[in-house]
Image (cartoon, rainbow, N blue to C red):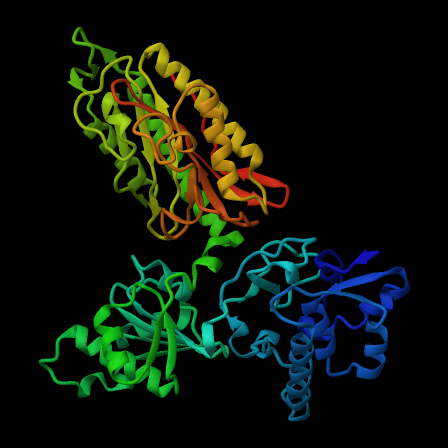
Length: 539
C-alpha cells in the first residue's frame, strides 16, 4: 500500500502553481492497483483542478482508499473541491489567471468548520485529515525540495453550537481566548465575530487598524468609527460604549445568535441580551483547540522554557556557592540569603531573557510543605528549597513551568527518601504518557507508588490528605499557566500535541516539601521531555 502523504506530494510541487492544480499527475505516477491511499484534503484538491476530467478522475479515485476524519464527511470535501474548481474556472475564463484563493474558503459547512489563520510547520508523513482538531495543508507554493517551515492554513474544527457565531470581547494581553484567536496584542478591548464562513470581523480602536490589518488573524479589520463610536454620547461610560459597539458589530454582520466565553464583560452580555441577541456563554468553546499545540506554539513554549532553565541555574548557583554561617543560615558576601532575594535573582534573569515571572516559589523548610507558599525569610543549610518557576514569554505570550528541589548540604534522611521516591514517581509517570491514555490513570499510578512506600494520597484518604502527596500530578501549559488537560482525579484523555507538566511531590509539615517538575509534549509514541535541566538534591 502506498500512503500518499506530504513526502510524496512535496517533491512533485512546481514553483508557480498552487497545490490544487498540480496533484492530478500523481495518480498517473502511482498505479492505483498497488493500493494508493490519500487523505481527504488531497481528494478535494484533486477535484479542484480546472483541467481535470471529473469522470475520469472519479473512475481513478474509485480504486483509491480515502482517509476521512470523523469531523467533515467525504461529501463535504467533494463539495469544497468542486466549488473551488468552479471558482478557478471562472477566474481563468475572465483572464485572471490561476487563482491563489485558498481552498479552505470553500470548506465551511455551516458551523462544522471555521477558517483560522494560524500557520504552522507541516510534519512530513502525517495524515492531517485524521487529526481531530485541525486539518492542515499547503496554501503557498515552495520550490520543490524546500520543505522546512512551509506555512499552512489551519482549519480549526471548532463546532459552534446551534449555528451560532463566535463572539469575543476583551483585550489580548491577559485574555487567552481572544489572543489565541486574533494573534495580536491589544491593550484595550476589541470585538471579534466569526460566523464560521471564513469572513471573520475584528473591530478595534481606529489607530490600531493599520497594525492589526497587517498582523491580526481576521478576515476584516475595522475601526470603531465605522460603527459610529463618535455618534455616541460624550458622557457615556466606556463600558457602555463597548457594549453598544458589540451590538452594532453583531447587527451589521447579521448575527442574532452567538456563543462566547466567560471572559466577556457582564455589562456587554447584559446589553446584548436586552437588545435581542441570543447569547450563550460556553467557557470551553476554545479549550479543545487551545489544548493541542501546533509547532509554532511548541517553539514558543520551548523558548520560555530555555529562559526558565537559565533562571533556575542562577538560583541554584547562588545556593550552591553560599557560605554557611554559624547560625546555620546561608550567606552571600556577608548578606543572608532569603527566599525574597532568591526570587529577585530569578526574576532579574527572566527579564534579561525576555520573560516575566509572577508568583515564583522559593520556599524553604516548613514553608515548602504548602505547595503554593512562595516562601519567606532566611534560608537554612540542610533544608529543602522548592524552586518553582513559571514565566510567560513577553513577546510570544506562552508560559513554561519547571520545579526543582535542592538543599545546601545534606538534608534530613526523610527528605532524602521523599526526593528519591519523587524522582521514581516522575519517571513512572513519563513512561505512561501517550495519546489515548486517561490522565487520571497516570495520576493514580503515582498515588499507588507513593502509597506502596507509606505515604498518604487521594486514593487512601478519599480526599486530598494534609501530608504526603497532596495535589494533582500535572496540568496543561500554553497561553495560561494552568489549562487543559489535567493529570488528576478527573477523567481526561491525552491527545497528541498537548503540552503538560508532570510534578509529583511529597510534603511533611515539619520538614518541608519535595517537588520535581518537568514539562512534556505528548507525541505519537509517548512524550518528549521539553525540560533540559539536571535533577540534584544536594548542592
